[in-house]
Every structure is written in structure tokens, then in C-alpha cells.
Image 1 (cartoon, helix red, strand yellow):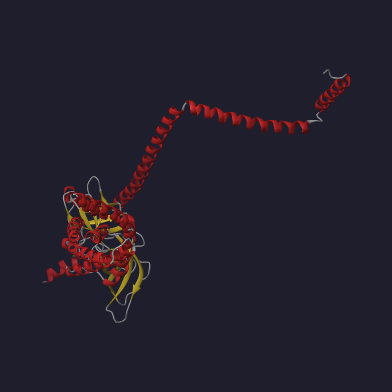
Image 2: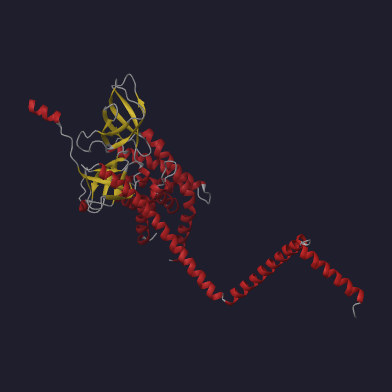
Length: 166
Length: 284
């Protein structure tokens, strides 16, 4: 996708994540908009563009985070790679694909952030974090993927058409 | 055809009888029934004619009505927006009043500047870190380490300061540690965060002292990082195991961290005098 479109889009997603997240809390879970964006886009566009989106998205998130800035950037890259691998395994219209990919990607993202934060001396507890944050967020993200996947497909097909025309 | 005399006579008799009956009130029930029917009929005819008149009016004034309808719809939309805005202002006003009461009740602390409050702009995008972003920064006199409160109690402390914004480390973050005091039993301990939506844990409480459920936990003021007597929360569970040196208490925070809107930054307060340390130093 055009860099003049994707960069502002990712910045907007970061702002949405910071500002909207607390208002969308359901049963202690909050959606990770950047993770959803990177994961779904990687699922459609493959690892190269997905990784670029992960790096840019992670950078924008880091601007708003009080924690170590590299954590979010590093954590999003494997999300892009895993999601794009999902694309080669099964490809089709079925919604089970984004649902399962985003669920796995969310858990991976959570575990990565947890262990990266631990390396910086953070005092979090794995079982509490998993029970109260990681798992609820993964379920919420997976459900959100069902809503967002058709939109991403539309954007993807529009972008692909544009490329073919060029 | 000419009516016969008999018919005219019979009709005259009938009219005369009706008039006599009417004057004596013998036909009142019949009359009221007739009136009722005629009224109903009249109202039906009236409503039909009114509808027809309305239809005619609508057809004649279609353009005017359409314009008026559009104008009224716009007015409704505008008023709805206004109403939402007024409700927001009302809610904000309520919050600010609460904060104002808090500053009145605690006159020994200095609160941030003319605006007094910092508005919460957002939450940390890292899912496990508990930070919020405020719309006040170093230009407003905010410095790292300043305590942040609401009328309900302690929120956290300023961890990063920029010129117009700042970040607050919430007391629910696992990296947060606050010196707490149990209000009734007067025991002190360290209150640590355990992440979002998980109650706090008060540690280092002496093993053989009695800690009751429902006790209020306040800041002890020790360490000088927070003023004394700010409410942290309430004990919901006591964890006491014989093999541990200390007992622990689970503390439910008094502040609802999911609904933070306006907060107060305490810019100045008098830390507790550290008499013990001063005494020790003198002895040395």
C-alpha cells in the first residue's frame, strides 16, 4: 500500500488505541487495534509489507507508551510473520482463518511483551497477567477480527486492483 | 300526488305527541341516543373533512412544508448535539466540584495551578503497563514524581514529563509500590500493583498482628513520595500463612481506573519529618 496512506493510517490506529481502548473495555478485555491491523494486513499482503507495518505501527505505539519503547516494536514483528504464515496454510473466505490467526497472534504478542518487559526488570506475574489480560484480550481481538476482516478484504482487493491497473 | 287528509291528520297528531312528550321530558333517552349518534357522525365527518383539508393544504404548500420540516429537523439535530454537550459539561462540572471539595478538605497540599486538573487523554497502548496520559506538562509546573489523585483517592505518580503532556504510573502497575498504612490497626506495609483489573497487594504486614477485612488503607507518608492520609483502598482479603514472615492483604483500590477523566496533580506537599533517621545520624 502507498506509504502516504499507510503511515497516517497506522498513526491514526495508534491514536485510536490510546484514546478509545478504555471505552471499549468488555469483561476486563480491551482490543489491540494495532495488533489487529498488522495481523490482518499481514494475512492478506504477506510478510514483507506486514513487517513494515509492524515496525511503523510499533513505533507509533511506542510514542504513547510509558514503558520501554522497543518492546512494542519488537513484539509486533513476529505477529506479522506468524499472521502471514497463516495465509499460506489456508486461504479462503472462511472467517475461521482471521479468527484463529488473530487469536494465536494475540497470545504470541502478549507473551512477547511479557517476557520483554521481564527483561527490563518489570514485576508482573505471568499467571495473573495471562488470566486477567492476555487471554481476555486474545478472545476480544479474535472477535473483533470477525468484524474487521471483511473491511480489510475490501481494502485489499481495492489495492490489488489498483496495482493490476498500474 | 297530493297527500290525503288522513295522512296530514296522522302526521299532525304525531308531531303534537312528540312536542308534548318533549315538553314533559318523556323522550329524553331517545333524544340523548339520537344526539350521541349524530355527534359521532359529525365527528367522523369533521375528521374526514379535516384530513381532506390537510391533504389539500399539504399539496398546496408542499414546498413550504418540506422546507419547514427540513429546518425543524436541523433544529432538532442541533438541539440534540447541544443536549449532549450540556450533559458532558454537567458531568465535568460534577467531577470538578468533587475535586474542588478535595482541595478544600486538604488545604495543606498545593495543587497544580489555575486549571488545577489534568484531563486524561488516553491509556498506555502496552496492554500490561498501567500508565495514563495527562494534558498538563512541564509548562504547567508538572515534575516527575508528583502524586496524582482524584476525590476518591490515590491514582499514581507522574513518571514522564513533556512540555504539554505527562504520563502517570498508576498504582495498579506491577512496578508501582506505595507505602501504605492500615487506618484502624495502624500497621504499615508496601502496596504493590498487580496489573489492570486485579486488586492491589499490601505486603510486609507483621505476621502476628490482626488485620481485619474492610480496613481502609491510606498512604503512610513514609518515604516522602506521597502525602499522608490519601486513600488507597480497602482490604478485601487477608493472606496469612504460618511459614511466611509477613502476612499480606488484598486491597481493592478506591479509584475506578477505567473511568478516569479529571485528576489532580499535587505539586507541593510537606513530607513527613524523618525523625528516626535524623536521630540515628546524630548518634553516629
